[in-house]
Image (cartoon, rainbow, N blue to C red; front, side, top):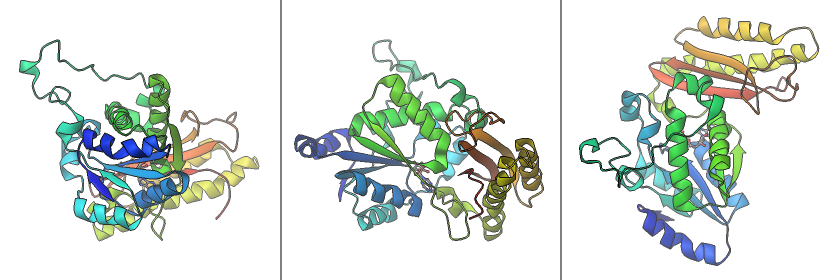
Length: 304
Ligand code: AMP
C-alpha cells in the first residue's frame, strides 16, 4: 500500500492507473478505522481496480470544537488495518494540504480580494435544515466542502459511503449534481457489533456502562421495524410508532435523545401514509456519556 500525504504525490501515484484505463475508487474516512470502514474498502476492491482510502479529520464539519479535539486518532493502527484489506493507496493529508489559512478563517487580517477563496456555501436545500442539518449547523457545508476537495484530488470513478450516515450520502449526491461531477456514488449497509450497536469511531469513547446503554438505539430501531409490519397491515400508524420510539428512548437510562424520525428514504422528509411503504427509514440521534451517536434502519416490517 502506498501512503501519500500531498495532492501532487497522489496525482502522480494515480496517473498510471488512469492512463491504463483502470478504475479508481475512493473511500473517504476520518480514521479511527473499524470493521465498517474496512467493509467499504473491501467493497471498493470488489467493484473497482484501485482503492484510495482517505483519512482526514475534517475541521470544517465539526460544529463543536471539543468534538474535533476529542475525535479519536489512531493513524498507525489505521494504516495496518488498511494494509490488511489490501487497500492500494492511503491518502493522509495534513489540514494545510486541504485548506488554505483563509478557508479556516486563520488569516483574515492579511486577506486580499485576489487570494480570497470562493466561500463555500452550497445550496443543500432542506437537507441543511432537517435531522443532522438542524442539530449540527454548518456540518453538511463542511462535509460537502471536503468531499468536493477529495473528489478533485482523487478524481475517482466511484466513491463508497456508508448508510450509517444516510443524510451525508444525500448531501454528497446533491453536491455531485450541483457541481456536475462525474463520479458514481455507492452506499454500503451499516456494519454492526454482534449485539447490534452500529460501529462508529466514537464508540471507543463510551464507558462500559454507556456502551450497554447505547444499545437502546438499535433495540428501538429493531422494535420499530417489527411494529412497522402492523402499520403495513393497517393495525397501527406511523404516529403510534413515533410515539413509542420517542417514549422508549426518552425513558432509556443514560440516553439524551436528540431526535427520532421516520422519513422517506429518498427525500428524508417525514413520512406519511402516502409514502410508498417500501421507502421508509427510521433515524435516530442522541447522546450517551457525552458522545453523540446516530443510527438508522430501513423499515421492512420483517422481524429478523
Ligand atoms: P467516518 O470516518 O465516520 O467519517 O466514516 C467514513 C465512512 O464510513 C462514511 O461513509 C460512513 O458512513 C462509513 N461508516 C461509518 N460507520 C459505518 C458502519 N458502522 N457501517 C458502514 N459504514 C460506516
